[in-house]
Length: 245
Image (cartoon, rainbow, N blue to C red; front, side, top):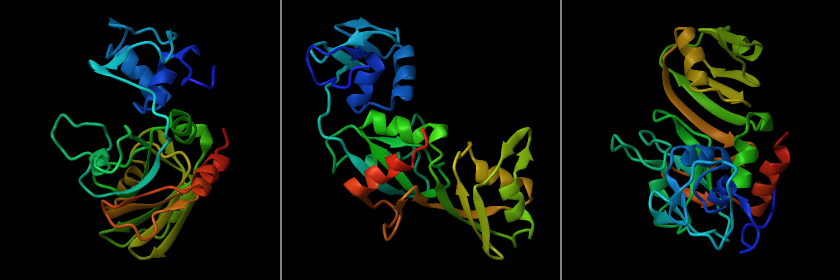
């Protein structure tokens, strides 16, 4: 696969072009292509192997795309009640809107947090970076602080570390530690959909608050809900060095 999509002569796969245009990760870009939302020189393309170059006219939903030369890596403190998508058909607030006034680049989130959780969420326009971090084989640690409405069952942290099967799905934390009778620290490396919530619900525990405080070497720190900052070069390289893929 060519490494320089900015060359007008160099051809790359269409999903790679989309990723380098800040549309989405390569995997998400593949679905966008299959959905018939991308046209090359006025012709809708749904073939994933299609090769394009910077001289081609490429549009998404009728809007022209161009390669973005500056790579952005942003840490956002996602507030409660905000969804992780580029837009929401139900009209709910979306996380990326908190960044639009400060960044001209088209940014998208790496991974997700559900609407009722808050905390660290990374945004980028670097498709290669997003693909590496979001792939399950990367095994990037994600740390959460979970607060419960009722006292935690004494066995829950140890069970979560050993592994819990809920409705046929196996959930296993890399680490889990009871901080007090109502608070637990949980570290995941895979992060299946609503994993923590399903394990707690299975144990009969209602979650009052769920916050992600760390992704790999990047900590939420002193950011408040809705605030964001650029990742340092050291943080970006640190995240990539932690990836096991």
